[in-house]
Image (cartoon, rainbow, N blue to C red; front, side, top):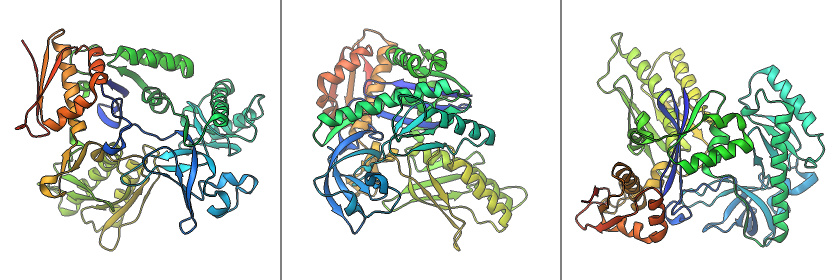
Length: 497
């Protein structure tokens, strides 16, 4: 059973995809403090179209730095700038022939800022829709690699050729058909393409009036994006715990995907929405390095600046048939779980996995196949290498966002940076959710909060904006008190008499 649960808090929107009762995808988008890059932000900039200005051209690395209005300049590689060469776009032109310092360039953010690195950019802008993606600089029809049926691919390619000849299209543009296009007819595809063409023309019109750096287009919000990108043919329901968000979702469905509107539901309790599948426990577990396996073993995930190390351990588990079968059982469970953990934790880059040693090559191949299938579920580019002479398996996974642990924690000053402690804003968001739960359980009652000073200061800095958001959630009377003796991660939320 495939379900999408949308929890709308006063400070954050969390979207969970659950399959057969298990959390598979988690997206968090902050609504308060979202643009504060110093605390990791929270709003994804991926998909934003910006008119930027080239600050520096670096022939040594075949890239340019572009001012896009962020704290750090964006990075535009020569390959990503190739479409700026126009008719010569197929050739590997050096970056110095594509852009010069001071040039205005229309770019799109394809990777959020991570750590000390700025956003990754491309000049090959694409505009995603429900069924297809408009590629203004890439003529022709392409299909998602996840559309595997040969007959369906041939049918969609034929429809695509008919689509690009329709009147009112974008000259020289192409389309990429998404997996949602499976089974769609020409009329549905044309409606989607018309909407995307309107968005592209709006961007071009805005460019004529803008001065860099200027944001020209922002992708749809987190709720609409979840509907567009996460709803599948077999999605049973999309459940919201906020009436306004549910109505906005229905309005988006009526406009872009009418067949989904009847699946949108409003959750009215009892309890909290994420309690339906005990998701809060799962989410808390994503902050811990150890992940238990069904057999009794576990995997440990530890990150560093250079790579992420994964260790597989059998614990007290032993298979009755001996060591080789023990290793096979534990390794298969670890390989199956690892893709889910990397996806939920937002881990990318180089990942090194130390599986339990195995002698039989056929069993090693089973492990690698299971790992590859587990990693392929979300469509993020990955590569899995055969075991090294030391038995280590190297995985590369494209970085698309800041890891979850980085968004919610920071280095612990008490241990000179060797450990992590939750950020004040992450603790504050937990407090906000607890306040909302208390207000729901005791409508009209005053609520008191005691927490560490730095947490209360973060809350106070959001002032009336946060209080107004809490009032809309039924918590109109809340008092906050600093407690010097309270550790950062502890707090108390109580209903007052």
